[in-house]
Length: 183
Ligand SMILES: NC(=O)c1ccc[n+]([C@@H]2O[C@H](COP(=O)([O-])OP(=O)(O)OC[C@H]3O[C@@H](n4cnc5c(N)ncnc54)[C@H](OP(=O)(O)O)[C@@H]3O)[C@@H](O)[C@H]2O)c1
Image (tube, rainbow, N blue to C red):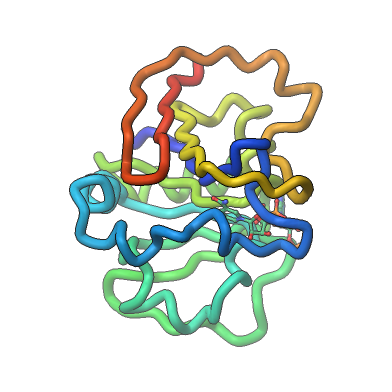
């Protein structure tokens, strides 16, 4: 059964986006990461991607095909699918899930087969999944930047009940990659 991994890149002071919703300062290594063992292993283990509607809208929806690192089925949790379907091909398809995160996880797991469901953002979806006990692994890449303000990933009091076990710490260039099993 596919495991569900929530991943995010976070500033040292705990933000996953700046006050304007931007992530540029969190990804100075975006180009440098391409083709590294770290990225290749992430790509190999990923059978489906899950994201919230705001994360989906961060970039040009038509640019996922061909451009995005994960050329796999993508599941977007939303209250209302976009009027125009984004570009798809035989590997990267979009499913807009309107009946909640549990349904989105079930559909993404089924598409992922024996590979993982990679939850790539944002904070809203990550919190709902953690609260619902639907996450197997939490991966936080810490960037040595201070944003001062912005969007926090894990600032909900209900998350205080989530129990974590450290699995691994890796140096990946400028980032420190932390992996935790969610118990
Ligand atoms: N640093 C990182 O690693 C990283 C990664 C990804 C994103 N980000 C940043 O995170 C921000 C986006 O995250 P976010 O927390 O604001 O939003 P998000 O989790 O990406 O998306 C939230 C949206 O998803 C839809 N949604 C959520 N739960 C739903 C439910 N149960 N049923 C139906 N629809 C539901 C709603 O959209 P509708 O009501 O419009 O349908 C909601 O507004 C951006 O600023 C982005 O730059 C950072």
